[in-house]
Length: 249
Length: 352
View (cartoon, rainbow over the protein chains, first blue to last red):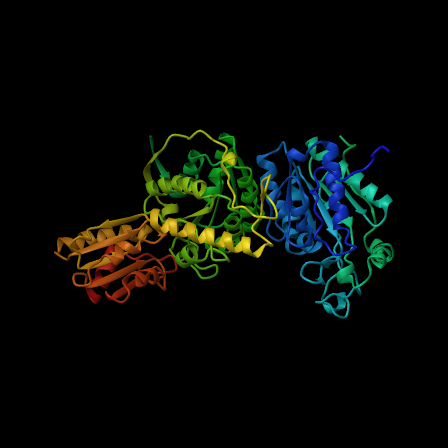
């Protein structure tokens, strides 16, 4: 029988450190798949954040370094400016990018840095145990919002990173994807490939948001978490391409 | 060697370029603005990269990326900016990434006085961030020393694969003096020389650089490695000037701009027959404890610590060395105000 699929070469043959049902592993496997397809295992540098996302450090079989909380886009700026020939991406969660690293993401995007940001959005602080994130949904309970997020209680509204990044003039490509179904995972893979192609062509800043889950801190089963994404997350964060100027000029 | 008349801040920047620095990221703060300004025009000429970071925090983070690629990297700031950079400096110590950080010191606490002062001694030498790491800290007292020790800091950063600090007071940054600039060094990529402490979970076959280890034993081993490194620095990297201490009955301990004022006071007092000398730490860390420890309590009547800081901070290290055997006095000015040699002599006469 012909072998039509196997573990990406740039993915270490180790178990992911993630909780059962967590989709970080899926997202990171897709990244490795695209890096293999591009033949860039030897020329990729990943800048990892603080939070669950950073555990990709054990999975990725290519060069990587760990930024401080929220600073990955600044670190990636230093990496890419001094090694323009490398494929450089950050892989960040919502607390990292939307709270403590909001300045770094917005200014890297505003400078039009030629690297790619992969943003895994699951609406919670996974590693620290389910505190409120900037992307936590209205009414969603968190360990620091025990009654559910309430804007009238001073807890703010869910922040929309793709829309904010797309509002800047220099980013080239911004898309929000999901990994809740095989079809969506395939679309995410395409978006990552497109973002990396844009970078490798030297066109500028690309941003791929991936809607993902956290069964552990949402307090639901893995299967229920998939339904949650469909019923609740899509309503707040519609999938789609928010910016694509690759076809213009 | 090329002799030029140059401002301290710009000389530090040029020294960085000549040492092979090809990445600079920084943020505006007084009194160090000449450094990023100079770098913004000089770095492209030298074929390097200048980035004006959106913050102090982003600027030090950018250095992590460039240092990862083996590019000699530098940032500069002043007190409040160093507080902000402390997260990144600590992380670079944990990642074993070399860089040179310049603190053109001003007054404090908080926003403080924005002209020159020497108010960051304890931060520079004891805790430039969390986690118990250290840096070799050079305190230049002339523009020439600012050039020489900036270059040395790049060498030491590379030798020990750790961030290093230049603690120049704001006066050194602002004065103009004639200075000999060394030849431009050929730029060599450091990356091939990187050797990281082995972590069991990552980085076995590829350059994977983190300041975290989930294996607690490995993390402790790394902490021990750093502690051993600091022992080596204390053995090999102490730099000090001992000035007229041989017969001294009074010894001034001071550094940077204060040491120039002290030198003028010592010369004047010597003319009056007072046996007075000076121990000037050039490396604030490692501190020259031995130069003070060896002072004879039967001969030296008093030690006077001078610093452009209130409270005087360097006195804590002097106390550690003296162990109560010689009385210590301290005199400082703060808020960017500077003592004169006459003022120092007046104080000396009041305590001798």
